[in-house]
Image (tube, rainbow, N blue to C red):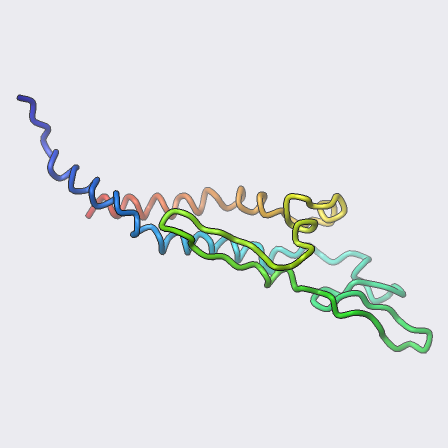
Length: 150
């Protein structure tokens, strides 16, 4: 009969990590980390389109603005505040979801990003996830390693 030394300890560790609930706080942390990278800190620099020196401009956090002939301001408060609208949550012990209700997000930071938004410097959600995945995965791997050491 072959005996593996440490077999019982290994089996105990494998049983312990088969319950992945210990990962949930780390998945929540990963979701929060990615969400923070999508918020206002990811706004690219303003362009001429954001300048009130123009007769018409887009004011971030407010919407379209224009200057009337008498010098007063008009416009529509249409901004859905994309940066701070990103939310996320862990949907299971191993998955999370990140999203926004901003109607125009898909053209600014989403899969249908317009060429002008890319040129301005907006990062897509996929780009942010790619840039942050190594850090997030290291954190999750550390959690697994710590659980195995118990």
